[in-house]
Each structure stands twice: as C-alpha cells, then as structure tokens.
Length: 88
Image 1 (tube, rainbow, N blue to C red):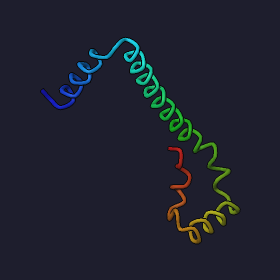
Image 2: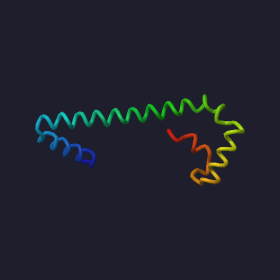
Image 3: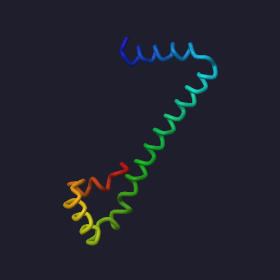
Image 4: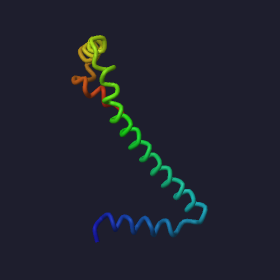
C-alpha cells in the first residue's frame, strides 16, 4: 500500500470516530479548501489571459523608466518580467 492510500485510510478512520457535528465541520473545511484552490487557479488563469491585453500598457517608455528605477534602487526584482507575473 502506498503512503497516499495509507494516509487516506488513517484520515477516514479518524473522521469516522468524530461526532456528527465535527464531521460537518470537517466537510465545511474541505469545501473551503477546494473553493480556495479554485479561486487561486481562476486568478492565475485570468492574470495569464490578461497579459496580452496589458502588454501594450506595460511596454512603454514611461513604465520602463519606473521598472529600471524599481529594479536598481529597491533591488527586489532583477527581471521585469517577474514583476508582470506577480499573480500568476
């Protein structure tokens, strides 16, 4: 039996030993985790799709000056393409 199946079996046993009100809490928490994961994936997909639309806005001389200032003085990002992908 692989470790994933073993962990799953242990978790199921623990859940079966919970009182009904706690099982409801576990189910709510699992739903929350799944929804959170879906929101993250949706946000990343939306950001990726918007890159092309925003390329005309991002790629201009004014922003290039800001990007260069930000990268050289703050030192946080060495590659401006990374700053364009914060949400991806």
